[in-house]
Length: 328
Image (cartoon, rainbow, N blue to C red):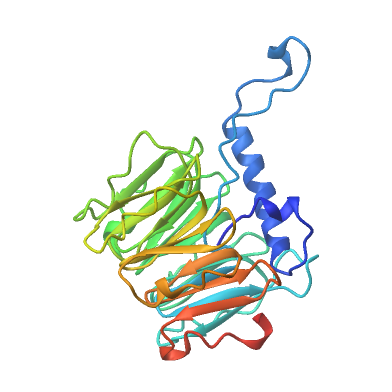
């Protein structure tokens, strides 16, 4: 799900947080290179120039991910571990909750499939909709939508696969740091913080503000998307008939996650605020601090800041809230 700046500012007390440190350092390096604005030779005093970094970006679905009716998380044995095994729960009618063995550093859930990045940075997907031929190469980040997935390769290009023609067609060229897959559309953040979206556009879900730079984005399994801008405010676009694209305007956020007709954001104080259609996802606890946040269709989950345990809320159907004991 996410990268947390406090993963390196605060003591690591949770097995999950070693993942934050690793992913944060990776992004910081890539963005610093991408936004290089000078070097010591240009300063006149031989002092290195600090790059114009608008991040750390928050990569959604890093160590916990809610699909439509299932969730997956990465279980590590100690905070010193870099990766861990994937544990899933909830609906498994397509094999989406049956991950392969091995160690992973990131996981993402779709409708009937899930994908993850192994510790060697190769990609693995499972369930219905998983690619028959596994995409080759090394990946930095992956996101699973309804019936398609996309990933950021090591060279920072976007690679997509699946059966949702809108979501996998016309993937933009260029270099990117995050991609998020929704229902028949996808969006990605370029190295300069600008967002490009492609796919179906029946509700304006591709019409992102061209003058806004983003830290993190979330494409909905509905027909809208939201993102955290460079000043930590929220911007949403697309279908808004349930006010799902009308986020709070008077608060600062570090992460946003979208559901079908709702969305929730993680504020700078690590508490959760939700908006849109009242449903299971909007029943998020308001008195708990989280490091990570992820939404399915009618349930949500997060990793608690206090103890690193997983907590979920919303619709109890299909064991969506039956968190494996090892993750509590």
